Amino acid sequence: MTKTVYMACLDLAGRRCLVVGGGPVGAEKAAGLLAADALVTLVAPERCAAAAALELDWQPRGYRASDLDGMFLVIAATSDTSVNQAVHDDAERRGMLCNVADVPALCNFILPAVHRQGPITVGVSTGGASPALAKALRSQIAGLVGPEHAALALELEALRPAARSRFASYEERREYFDELVRERLS
Image 1 (cartoon, rainbow, N blue to C red):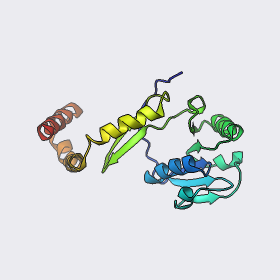
Image 2: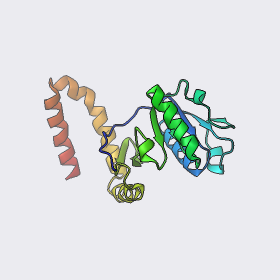
Image 3: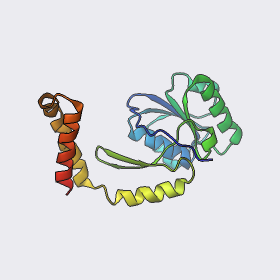
């Protein structure tokens, strides 16, 4: 059954995150965390070439519940159902964010298909119903968001301090920026 999810963007810079599983899926998840400046630990007896190429802390062994100590979130990406279930159960007991790749029922957060262009990040989610559809939609959206949008985002960011001193209320600032965006995108 598909879930209705609350979309949020996590600031993972400097936060410790765990990936359990050293195959291609684990490598993909670890790379995404590293792109967000997370401090990533990978626990897996072996790792694929893509995982080996990543700058992270590799623990060459099987998963232990104590691997969750001090972690902000965990992603289980193994082909072993019992390991994935154990990671989920241990994370739930600790009230941690947990994602089990390709098993939405064992996730308390899901990962959208993401496109990044400078400071812009666009995520597409189907609530776990179809990662393939999310990726296809992300590819279509990627064609709409280009370098010119990233440059505009940076320009608007630079205007925020002046707008904060010029306009007293959030509503006034919102109207000001909405108008600037309308002008630039038309």
